[in-house]
Length: 260
Length: 260
Image (cartoon, rainbow over all chains, first blue to last red; front, side, top):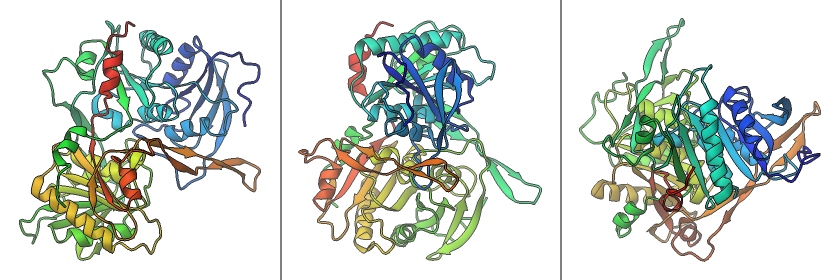
């Protein structure tokens, strides 16, 4: 086990991870703001893991090795997915279990249906399954030179609220932050929408076809004022509580008497 | 586009996919039973994709090529994940959009929290996002020589019910089937539980550490008679309707008035 507790105070231990990989700027920005709240350990994938959802590595061994410090805190790079990193952090890699899991700051939003594809949110959901308050943070700016300064204030405010109020078990927060200067923070629900893909077909120099995934987001409830998409479009940060129970109870009532 | 419609009747087109890969026996068994209900096309990953959740491939091109027929139906092997296969099937790969998506038959169960890690269910969830009735089927038997004969009867019964009754949009079914002879089929909810990991640390011949993920499932509601785990343990196939809306509405009510 890596001696994370050595020379550390009794402040909470906050696991910082992400899906853009250990070299991503958003990770460094998140470490910087989290240092105000506790002791930090970073475990993140050595390569980018965007779109890896809650994927786990079941058919390969995982390698996790100490890496360069970020803002003075210990880091480990992991060969696996964001969820693998979280699982390892609670199981034998550290001599102290994290008290909080924060994931991000993602380069790009994870609002609406993106929650199911997002590695950022996969890590946060996994944190909640380990019984600790967990959050995923995403900034609506893919540019490498994005301004995280305002986003970090949102992160601090949301984390402070979680510190003070706690979160119900097996629930995490999906926090999305607009570009520019957010007007405030709104607790809301996941917008009903989907990605419309437009695969682009190309031919390689050997004459073989391949496809690139691209597409755009389609919001199915343009008139709603209750959704994460609505508030993001109106320059507010959105906070959606996310459950691990995927049962559709409404459908359950409709089909429970089916005769097979 | 591949000419799937050519020489085919006006029967529904059923996309068959899985997460164990195009060579898996469960896929062949599912094709065999689905042939009673419509025209079939298989698109599946060329390698095993267990635990790939709703992962998508955003940083690599996708290659999808015709492969050997299974029980006389056309197949395509895809370099991507189960969700990639579903997305491609609805976007340019075929000249006819699938009317149903069925995924499996998985070698091993996907009940309770496994729904969030499962590539089988990732594909079914993705099918529902494309607006067609979608189902994931899993058999509680990892053995290569597993008996699928009873499972196929369950598959046929559940699919027949969906054919007759339809499914609400953006909802799919997570169908788990016990070993042996199931006593019946129960519509139920996802059990509240989690995987408890026990990473096994080893050292390779070069002296470098690595970890293997292992673990066991922990059911948090041993007394409940409403869950998929309960019915599976009592030799019934379980049918859980699954939503794409991950908002925790109960938590929303608790935190909506947080002052940030």
